[in-house]
Image (cartoon, rainbow, N blue to C red; front, top):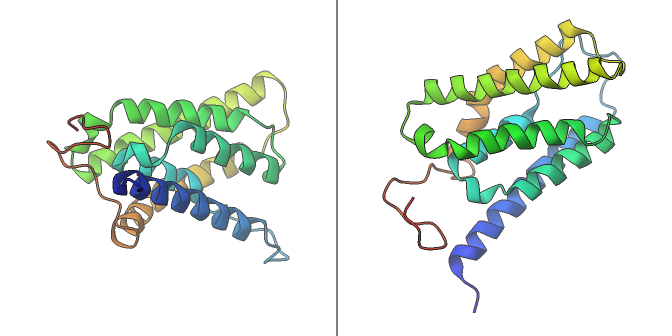
Amino acid sequence: MVDPVAAHRLAYRVLFAGLAALVLFVRILPLGAVPARVPGPDLILCGTIAWVLRRPDYAPAALIALVFLVEDVLAMRAPGLWPLIVLLGTEFLRSREATLRDLPFALEWLAAGAVIIAMTVIHRLVLALFLVPQVPAGMTTLQTVSTLLAYPAVVLLTRFVFGLRKAAPGGFDAFGRRI
């Protein structure tokens, strides 16, 4: 007999991976002949942070690293650096999930934004340290701003379409520990 809590958790993990795969697929499609002037938001990063802040057990570290490693390979970036930075950023947020759970959304958005900005700056600094060619700083800034502006929409989508809610204080996780 399958444990319903474990099956529910597995279903959300598969949904997370499937949504990331869908976003990656749409991103690599040759839809426009003219390059965009303003880069779009990093929806996978927004979704990952939203899932980690809502239900950390639905987005384990290994799955996050795998998703971003596949994204690195498909985007032909230096493999491993961005997944490592995202993993460190999401683990930082995961360790503070209990304190961020009770805060209003504006403060959650501020915390997520600070982590996104820190991850972007660290990524650019490491690439500059090793003299790796980079996208111009203005384009990176625009993408970071668009990612920050897309975060509330992604949170609304995860909340109302996928039913991903924050864990209730006083509830129990899959192992019987108090949340």
